[in-house]
Image (cartoon, rainbow, N blue to C red; front, top):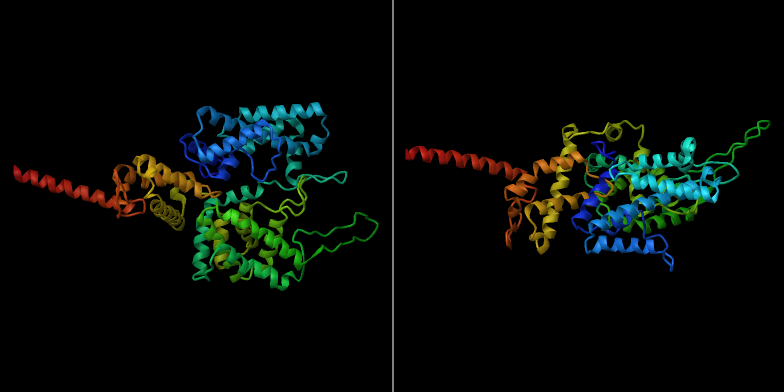
Length: 479
């Protein structure tokens, strides 16, 4: 949930829909995501008309021309029907779905589509999904939900064990805590070794551990379990978990490393910096035995046991980066000494619902993040005629929209957006703040503060008061 009670998925959909309405281009990942469509899906040569139309809309959302109101409605309609069809396929893999005849399966698909079409974009997708399952499964709804999320047995068949979106939903729970987590870890680390890039850093830490550490001489997979005999008349038999040779671990690591560059191009720089710090943190405190095998195995075998997936299907690129901090959080659970205690207090704390409920370090982290992004955005847009020709209001909304977009999964808490609008927008829109950073009317300028202008705003207010006092004194002298 977002901190004001709005689900993160709803907030992101609202934001993306608004950007489509005002004609702002989306990234490829956003364009695919809004239609529940991925570029990894294999498109046959005889692509059906609906998929062709989906691809056309995806291109338009990225490259223009802007969608009409009717086409935006079409996007939202296609989003709902694709979501319904995906859910229908998942239900068909459950015992409930396999027991249905062809006609009944058609009825399920039709009912799911009706529920999703009737739902508002402001509704929590999880709630809509549960309502849809209840509409088709009735009293068996909870059994269907359980089968889709935790697996089911019977007849030697395997069910859907892993929800493909689970890692992203888990990461979203910590999105508002990441700035403070980053502050605590970086303060603890102090000076750290510098690498030419994140991949080099990954290779010098996790990669080196997998290739050289004794941990991987012959180590069982972290998810292996002891199997007990069900024959009560005999002693219980414990089967040793399968031991994996180092070559298998190296192969898994290389597959993960190959995916990471795709994530680095679409996750915010602050998140890259955080996972950079986490790698150093793990090895500073010798957490390798918990962290490295778990991270490598869980990422490389994310869909192990799922219907329609092989046992070596790995997590998506963004999921591979999110698992870095999620794995750390699991490894330090119950550790209460020093920085571990501080981190667990943040992780276990209640979610704040207003700016005032944030502690000072977190407030400072959010303000620094905004100021740093603002400065970078200004420098990158100063020579852009389309940005220069915007009104102050449009330019201010544009920079905030891009700020929210670059945060990716770490959705901006609504009360932080409210703070930015309250504290920085008046200066930029009403008090000439854009001129101070180089966006003067009709020509390019330079100089001035470049941090959203809060400090300058106070100064200007004091100047106005002084000016009024002097003016009043002059008026009295004339009398």
